[in-house]
Image 1: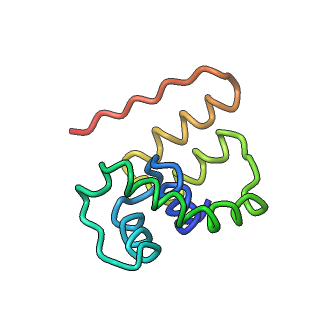
Image 2 (image 1 turned 45 degrees about the vertical axis):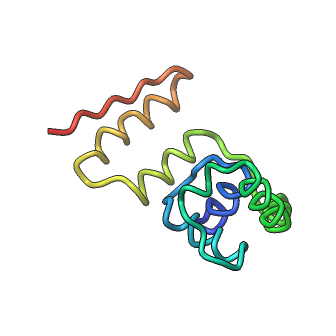
Length: 109
């Protein structure tokens, strides 16, 4: 899923995928005005955001193809994970491909 697709899905569903600042920028574009973060807790505003992002969201339907969780994890590894964590997550990804139950625990020093 591209950053743009994550932003659209986030605005439409209210579930954050990706970076908040990217979603916030998209919301301000579709609302055609500055939007304060406290407004995102307002049901009326969120419904307006949902309505204004619906066209973009529906246009994603043909582009988004469900992928196995392992593929999403792999994409996450390649784009978001720092090198220190990469090896641990790659091991978890390998484990996931051989079983359905995987627990990933990363401890930072």
